[in-house]
Image 1 (cartoon, rainbow, N blue to C red):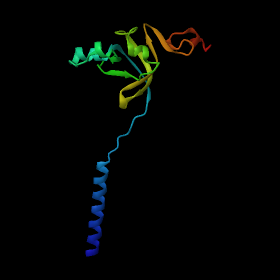
Image 2: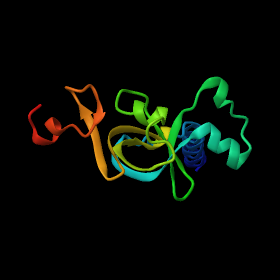
Image 3: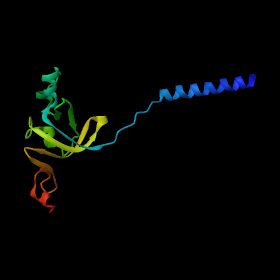
Image 4: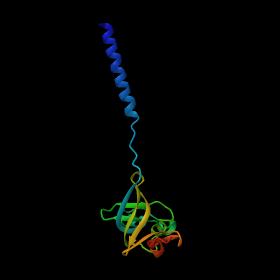
Length: 143
């Protein structure tokens, strides 16, 4: 009888110990990128947060970096590369409604831009022009 009690007690300790160890090693499932489309207003993130939330943005000193602000107030940030450069700078499309397609990385709240539509014109990367545009060669498949 004493042996059974000892074995049961040992098993309970092992089970309790493994539960304790696993509780300390909680792993979160990492979401990989997924294709997504977002529509919103292209705004300077710093200026907009300063105006709406009182953030201490200093865009005049450090530069404006644009993001897409959706209708529910969420900001979608762009991965910095040649595909997003014109959106990040905001010179051409700032304060306009833009629909952006790409690969969205939720853990980083970051969109890797593939194409975007503004003023009814879709813009995508043109290898000949070396920029995001509405190049007729790209649409006709001549590139």
